[in-house]
Image 1 (cartoon, helix red, strand yellow):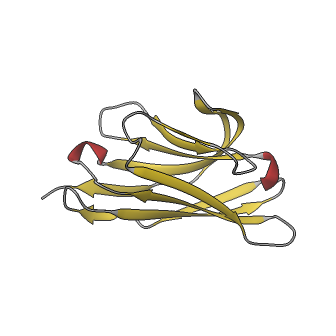
Image 2 (cartoon, rainbow, N blue to C red; image 1 turned 30 degrees about the vertical axis):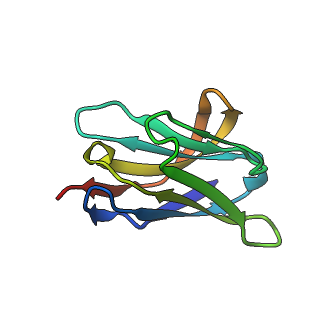
Length: 129
């Protein structure tokens, strides 16, 4: 069982920045890739970034490449707690969505995360003047 809790969403003007955080707890965290997804009203859920379980490589969607940066840290000796962050710069109105963190069993440099086992509850990001 894995629990994920996102924070850091809010309202920001176009061109601004936000940093999302995800507190992850549970067993076998070293096994999982950590992903960020987003879902805008009326649209399908979209993979934004995916960081490999080792942290050695990260996938970004083309729509956010060069503007968003994701990271992960293991913060407990037993490796049962971790944090993930999504730094979002140069935000655009089309970035407005609910952002979710998740843990996934499959990572690809070309396709991102697949086979998500657990999701967070989501945090709203609104980019508007």
